[in-house]
Length: 267
Image (cartoon, rainbow, N blue to C red; front, top):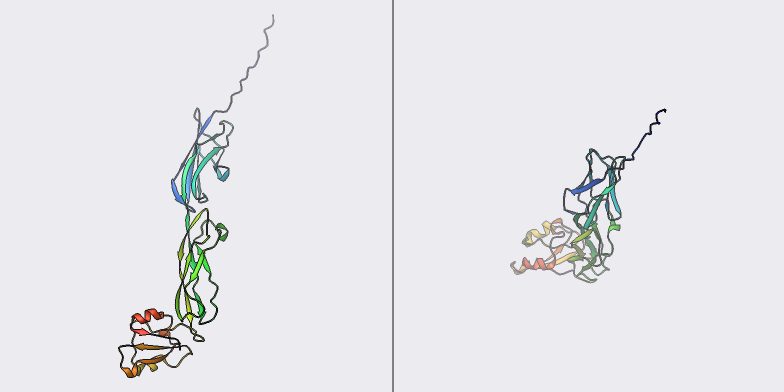
């Protein structure tokens, strides 16, 4: 009898299981600060995995990168503020099955924005200007759309307030943001004498004798103060100060001037 024909046997071998592990260079960062995520993929029976790893926070993808020698590093600054759980997902290749890492916790604090009240100028007995502010310190290419609401600004100056300097305070108001907290910088409103171009008072501690006062100040401007120095002789107590001289410009409000032994009143 002729020999029976040989049968070729074949066996399909499935992909080996893989394990993905994830680590981070920092466990706590501020929003906008860079952190490096490292994913390592190992085969069940050894070997080197190829393919791609994708990094996610829940359903939000941070990015992806290809494996090199079974490992990949991915650096990002775009992790939102809060307690975030990051997962690395391996896509599989011809030899190794897909796998996911355990969730990795990274705590991200809010970045700080600086809200600065804009300095303002007003003219005595006229309407006060509208208060405004500026915001600085955005990261990650963010802009004003990253915040909502507006700060609360206020000043003690009113229409008809005496010439001088008044604080502009700025506080949180309705400002809010998921990724930013806020710090505040106050400003100053200078209330000027009518037509004078500035709120001008003697510098604290600066004393002028009657003889050299006119020579020093000259005859400039239409905004004057009557300044009374209690320590001067009676015949030189009251001087009309013309306000455009630079030594008098924007130095001290009337309260500070009184503290130096000087007191003033609008002309």
